[in-house]
Structures are given as C-alpha cells and as structure tokens.
Amino acid sequence: MKTTFEGGINIAIKIPKSKYEKTVEFYKNTLSLEVTEKPIHNPTVSRTHLVKFGLNNLWLDCVDNYSHSETWLEINTENVEEATQYLKSQNVNTCDELEEIPENMHWITDPAGTVMIVKRKE
Image (cartoon, rainbow, N blue to C red):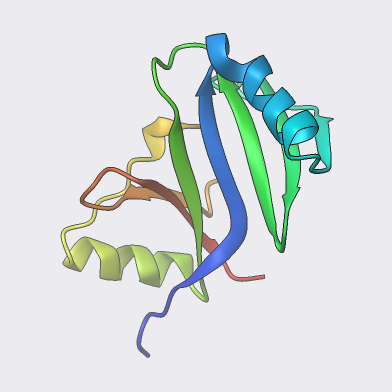
C-alpha cells in the first residue's frame, strides 16, 4: 500500500507573548473574523484562540519563549506508523520533542523548517 498524505483543516501560528494580544485583536477587530479563546493545558502554549478561517481552523498560540512567529500545519494520513516509517525512509525524522501531543501523532519538519503534525485522517 502506498502511503498518502493530505492537508488538514488545522493551522497554528505560534506567536511570541509580546505580540499575542495585538495579533488576536487584528483577527478579531481588524478582519472581523470569529475568534474564541479556548482553554489549553500545554507546557509550551500558555493561551490559544481559535479563528474560523474559511474552511480551516486557525489557532493563535501564545508561546512565551519564542522571539518570532512560526506557522505549523496539519498533515493527515491513513496509518500514522506506516507513514512515519515511509518518512524515515525519505530521511524525514520525527521531532516530537517540539510540543506535547498524543502518542499516536508525530511532529516533522519540511526542509525549510515548517513544522507539521502527522495524524490519522478522520
């Protein structure tokens, strides 16, 4: 079976604490998008807001220890472990130490450093 991937609906922007409030205000007040703060229990993300961004969920994550923002993407596949083995055969290693996630998912990066979560297609 060939491993296949497709983009998911979740996009996260990791935002430094010093720019977080102004960024939330931009999406809420300047763009007038639906913005809702969500509870989060994560050692690296102190706050998060969900923005309805067309068909996508845009997560604005406040990270206290970042100096610049980063965009993280979701990649879906039928079988995460088979996909992980395939990615390793292509010299793409997991980097699960980036942020806490369930054991049945993995973080990877593309050659430019864009972080992606690999998860099972729902």
